[in-house]
Image (cartoon, rainbow, N blue to C red; front, side, top):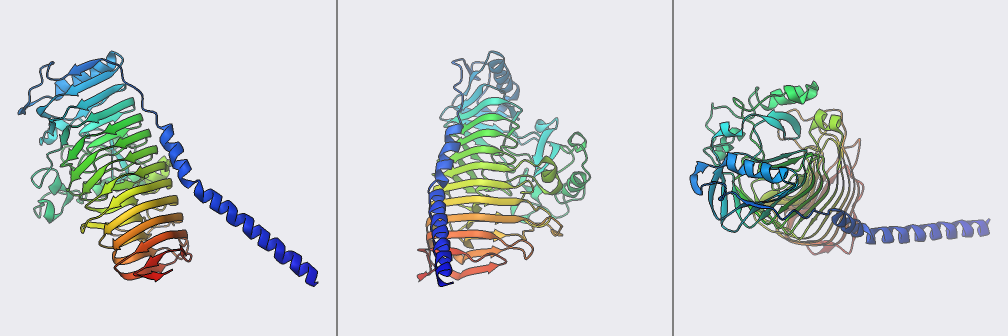
Amino acid sequence: MNINKTILALSIFLTTLISCKEQTAKKANFFDEADKIIESINIKQFNNLTLNIKDLGAVADAKTLNTSIINAAIDSCNAAGGGKVIIPPGDFLTGPIVLKSNVNLHLEEGANVLFSKNYKEYLPVVHTSYEGQELMNYSPLIYAYKQKNIAITGKGVFNGQASNKNWWPWAGKDTYGYIKGTPNQKDSINLPRLWEMSNNNTPVSERIFGEGYQLRPTFIEPFECENVLIQGVTITNAPFWVIHPIKSNYVRVDGVTVNSHGPNNDGCDPEYSKNVHITNCTFNTGDDCIAIKSGRNNDGRVVNIPSENIVVENCEMKDGHGGVVLGSEISAGVRNVYVRNCNMDSPNLDRAIRIKTNTLRGGFVENVFVKNIKVGQVKEALLRINTYYGTYANQEGKFIPTIKNIYLEDITVENSGKYGILIKGRKQSPVENVSLTNVHIKNAKTPISVENSEPLVFKNSSINGKKY
C-alpha cells in the first residue's frame, strides 16, 4: 500500500513537473507568435507613378475646396495600376477623400490637409459604422471600401477641424460645446433608433442616417480592406474615432501621431479585424488611446468576426481613458493581443490596460499578453477588468462575457492612482487565469480589488512595496 502511494505521488510530481515545463516553454513563445504576426503583414511596394495634386490644379489657400482634384488624382492613379498621389506643402481644404487600391496617399512635410466643416460635403451617405453597429452615414474623412494595397504616408498633418462649434457638440456633452435643447446623438432619432434597427436585423442599406441626424463620422476608415499602411502622419481634431480599420486584414499603423481631444476621440480602433500591427505611435487623445473592438450587441453577434492577432509595441500613450483597451463593443470577441515596450504616463490617463464589457455586449476576451511596460502615472489602475461596463442605461442582458488568460510581465508603475488591480467579474463566469510576473506597482490607494475572479497569480511582484 505504501509502495503504491509512493508511486502515485511520484507520478503526480512528474506530471506536474512536465506540465510546468510545458507552460514555461509556452510562455517563452508568447511573443514569438507576435513576431510571426508582424512578419505576415507584407505591405506591397507601390508603382513609380506619381501625381502631385498641385500640378493638377489644387490650390493651397485653406479656402478653395480641393475634393474633386484629390479624388480624381486617386482615381487616375488607381486606373493606371497604382502609384503615389502627393499632397505637397501648403494648406489644402477638402471634403472626404476616397482611397483606392494600389494607391499611396502621401503627405509631404509641411502639407496640411484641412477637412471641411460643412456637413453636407460628407454626403451622400456611405456604408460605415457607429459604435460597433453598421449603418449608412456621413462619409469618413478618409474612406476606403473593399480595397487592397492602400497607404497613407508622409510627414504632413490631417486636420479634421472638429471643435466645440462643429461635430463635437453632437456628443451631447457640455464640455464639448453642447447647448441644452439642441439635437445630439442620444436623441431617439439617433442612437436609440440605430440600436432598434440592429436588434431587429434591419438591413444596413435601410439604416439611413446622415443629414438631419447627429452621428459623427470616423476620420480614417479602411472598411473590408486588405494590406493597409498608415505611416508617419499626424492626425488632429477628429469628429469621432480617429483610425478605424473595420473588417480588414493585414494592417500596419506605424509612426503615427494622434493629437485629438474631442469626445470619443479614440486613437486607433481595430474592429472585426485581424493581423494588425500598431507600432512607434504617439497617442494623446480624448478617449481610449487604442481600443480593440468587435461589434456591439446583436450586430456583433450577427457579423461574428473576432478581432485577433493584434500587436501593439513601442508606443507612447499620454492622455486618454485607457492605454490599451479591449471593448466595450466586443460582442464577437477578441483574442491574441500582444502589447510590449510601451510607455504610458499622464495625470489624465485613466488606466493602462482595460477590458470592458457587460451582459448586453457579451463576447469573449482571451490570450492577452502585456510585457515590458513603463507606467508613470495613471488615475485609476494599472489593470481594470469590468464586466458591468455601462455608458448608457439598461446595460443588463443575457449574454454572459468570458475573460481568460491575461498575462502581465515586466511592468513598473510609479503612481497607480486609486487601485493597483481592479477586477469585477460575474458569478456566472468568473475572470480566469490572470497572471502577474515581475510587476511592481507603487502608490496605489487600494492595492487590489477583485470580485468574481480566480485567484490572481503573482510571481516576483509587489504593490506598495509589499511582495505578492
